[in-house]
Image 1: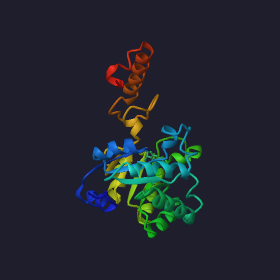
Image 2: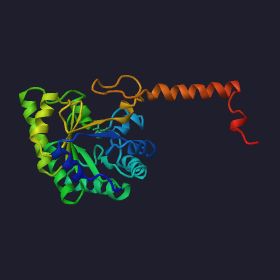
Image 3: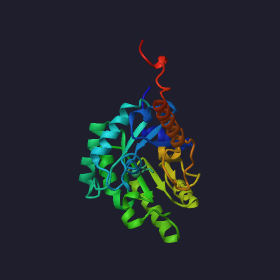
Image 4: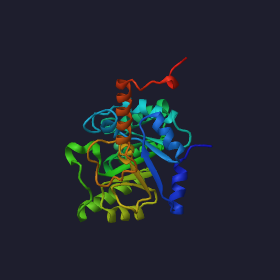
Length: 265
Ligand code: KIV
Ligand code: NA
């Protein structure tokens, strides 16, 4: 009855076992995923888009990540909880990254942090890992760089592919326990996965990655409008929840709720 550790994930790669990861932003949803056997949850800065109503992940603050991470930790017993370091809380250098990550580990109780960037973030990864904080890296499409990069598939063309391989190896060599590959052609993601001894976690990166992650509101059909083409929707929560709200509203207006069953005699 202990939490999943980074050693369990390393062992899974050795055995060739794939594992799932979902984002989580609150205790209740996280408890559902924990009871469903999801071994790793990410308190992603995607909370900016899907939870806090921002246009991107860029405005998300360390306070916001810390508060929701603490909730996810409280709501779970078994999963390894990974929290994103938001934009502007690690780019200044290793010392800033350590200060930010330490807060998430001490205050929120997470077991690991994630940060974006390959070669450019390797020094940050190294200091965190030396300090005892497990780090998940994130290369390919890195949404915190939306203003310079846009939301486009990465690693297309020989030069970009070689750079992506160097980025993934740089964070592995710096001590990262896993590397997220976002929006990368499947063949390149497969090559990165074979080249690394740590697990790759794919999102829009094909079937050969060691693990797969999705934003939970996308995978459950709660996100409004279009979702990226790499998302599979396993439920239609937006419709289900909307129907419940409409029926409740109708019954209040018509007087059919509450009945005696829902009243105190
Ligand atoms: O914030 C997030 O949800 C992420 C995943 C998409 C990997 O970084
Ligand atoms: Na993120």
